[in-house]
Length: 304
View 1: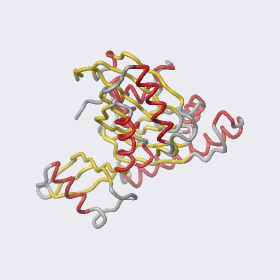
View 2 (view 1 turned 90 degrees about the horizontal axis):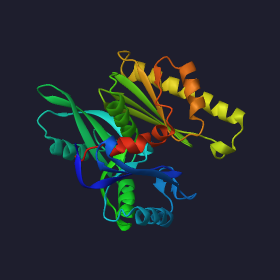
View 3 (view 1 turned 120 degrees about the vertical axis):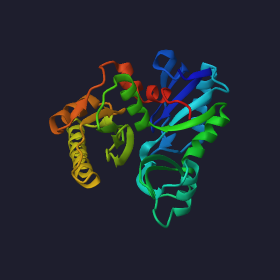
């Protein structure tokens, strides 16, 4: 059941909003409280803490109101910086040895777009000499920056997750649908994060910046339609790239999951259904489910 001693706080922070839930156990049924708080402009920019004082102020007020002092915390990191690679390592390495091996090989046998990464791995196929693994890398300084703020305001950060992983976790545990190749589109105010899942593992991701002049609420209908149309074309290109380059023509996307805080997500959904060959999975029309997909999925994560 994932019993927790005193419950757990779950927090997802975007550039514009902080969503939270509080559960007694790592189950949807144990929900005690949920909500969201708008972040002051300039608090978070492109997934980076721009104003630590503002973020601390928002968190301190929330923690005092909810009586969360010294509560355990799971939180989601911005997905914009994650790197996913499939790498071959010696078969004999244990999980801990493999991570140490990868740190030593960084910069020689493979490269990352940032220094000092936090690395996690998942074992895949193996033979007598080699093992395929999935490597997930993230800038360690970004993780530490969020952890420091959470600790300073009185929370106990235990686990950092990604929003895309949380949404997929919610989808699979809530709906139990089996699909070999699932594309998750996280369509937010200012960016798209596109992630492919195969056998319930994230194996490919791309971050697409939305070049909008102002907030979506300030845009004209024509500007919104153009933005949706242009990015739908990019999504189709990524689907083709995955099919013909990543999987060498051996696999097709069979399902598309759509989530995010873009205020015109219904229009996005209609355009995707018109333009994409794969089925577009529609979560329920419940505003609660659509708004809290990410934080509910985070709440389902078990502590490692």
